[in-house]
Length: 138
Length: 247
Image (tube, rainbow over all chains, first blue to last red; front, side, top):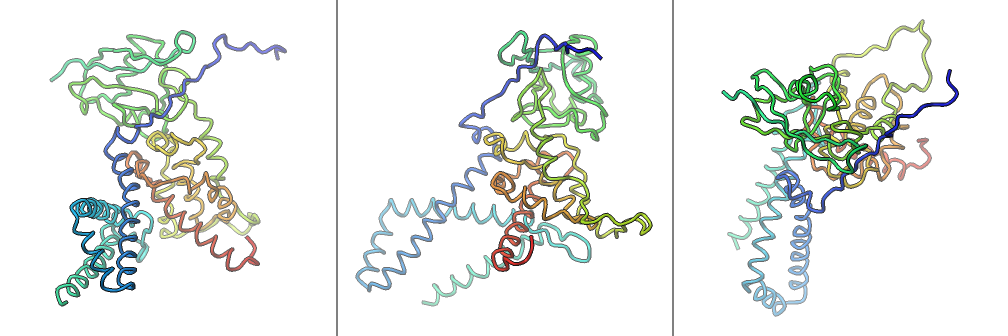
C-alpha cells in the first residue's frame, strides 16, 4: 500500500444555496401552510373576543352595550370578517389533517381518511346548529 | 408531435465556477423517455462531463432524485411528455450542498438515519433453536407502508423546515424509525424515543405535509411524524405521572 495518499486536485467545494426569506411565496402548498400558521393569531383574537364578552356580561348592562357599540364600528366588522375567514380556514385545514395524525384501524384495515375527518365536521355542524337554535330562540 | 425538447440543466463545476449555472441541451423527444433517459442521452452523446447519480431506472434504488421544474422528482419516473413543449429545468435536490452538477452531498441524512437505529433491536437475542420470529399479516400491515421508503431524499428537498434548519432530523428518518417501532419483532422503541423526542427530532416538524405529497412510494412521512408526536407526548405523560416506571 502506498504511504502517501494522492488526493484529487479539485477537492469538492460544496455549493450551498440559502433559503430565500420569501420561500413560502413560491408554492401554493407552502403559502397555504404559512396562512394556516398565521390563522392561529385570529383564533387567539376570537378567544380574546369571547373573554371580552364574558367580562362585559360580568360588569353589567352598560359595559355590554358599550362592547356591542364597539363591535358595530366598520373597522371592527372588517376585522371580524377577516378573522372569521381565517378561523374557517384554520378549522377546515386541521380537520382535514386529522386522519394523518390519527390513523384509525378497524379489523386490521385502515379506516378511510374521509371517515376519520367526518366526525369532526359532524360535531362542528351539531354545535353550530345548537348555537343557531339558542340565538334564534332568544 | 415535438421532435426535440430542451433541457436546462444546472451545472456546477467547482474547479471552474463559484456558483451553479444553467446549460441548455436539445435532446430528441420520445414518448417513452423519462428525464433520466434525456440526461443519459446528454452524457452519452452531447457532453460526457455532466455528473448525476442513477442506478436502477425503475423507482427502487432512490438514486436519481432531482428537482424537475422546481419539484422534487425521481427522474426515472418523470416522463418528458409531461413537460411538453419544454423546456425542462433539471437541478440538484434543494436543501442539500451540491458537490458537482446534479450530485448532492447526503452524509447529513446518512448520519441522521443511523441515529434512529433503523434495524430490529432486541433486549436479548433468542437462541436459534427457538426458531424464527413469526408475524401475522395484520402485524405486517401496521408498518408496511413505512418500509417502502427508498431513501431518495425527495422529502428532504420538499421540507422547508429542513431547508431552514438542517438540524431537523427530517421526514424519512422518522418514517423509518416508525417502520421499526411498529414492527412486532422490535423492542427498540424506547431507545429511538431518546433521539426522536429531542427538539430537533419530531418537534421540529410543523406539518407542512409536502414530504408526503412528493413521496414517490406513498410512505406518508408527515403522517409518521404526527403519529409519533402523539406517542412521544403519551410517553412524556407516563414518565411524568409515573416517574418510577423505568424508561
